[in-house]
Length: 421
Image (cartoon, rainbow, N blue to C red; front, side, top):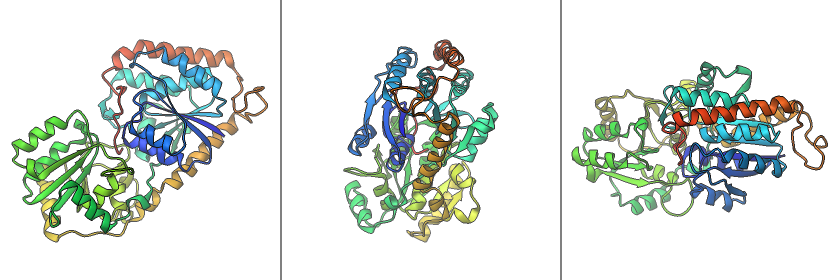
């Protein structure tokens, strides 16, 4: 089975790294097309032996991308196209339909009021739904996202839940890694440290964490991630008088040289997630795999499980005073490592890959055997109703043109907006 994965960008983010983890385990011949930003994850995919191509899309309204993408799919002999993130779905599904290849899309980051960290608008919702009808299946990364898609009007039979997954072994606590990472970050041996991971955008509410830190004397913070709020957060830390207790590392991967996310999780003593809303809560599950106590304000990954599977995770309110009180309690109790709870096993990446392969096989089964039906190009879905197919894709193309002007400040930015979702 040949599968083309189309993604908006390949900077360091949750969806991008999730794709890389899946490709290591999917028993299929997979290639990747990134519309924009062939960043660090592109390099790491190539190091894994995955072919990565860059479409060179210049902006949200670069409609020339659609015929270029269609030609690439047509010539590739793919059995299936799988799209990831908003812009890749909006352009990738019509391109797959025009190329007469079935498609699957994963919705990684749909919140109640935002998508991929940006406010939802009527325009980008309409555009998403117009393109969604051109695919064969939509994958939600949690039951919560599945419910949101249903509320939008996506038919229930088209929605499939494949939770995000982690490689739990990569996050297993290692005392030597703790020592090395603390040394690299200049953390004093006896310091009590909070860890947080995410893109520095308003929806992650790291300002709430800084205000709580100001009320928790002696507690330090390591914040992993980058984004447009970085300067504002640095200014806030200075104004609160805690700048010397806050370290922003910038983006870190899950492996590779230098400081990594597993290294930071080994180095800190508690993990905090202050997001207003999440589609899944990947960073929280990674922290649980590292044996950390966790304080979180929103995490569908845990909300969808029974309480006994969530281990040392604790739901807290979105008030600095309450969060500060919980941090002071944990600080007083001292550092501790906990056994990984059932949630870590539930969200194993191997299980996610197995579920996804089942969806691939179901979609291809509904289209019949691809081989032998399309002449010399194996893996091509038959044009069972080419007039309808072309008309539907042309309609979606018109919708892209008409709607993109109202969506350019929404979820379809030229760089990745998803981080540890």
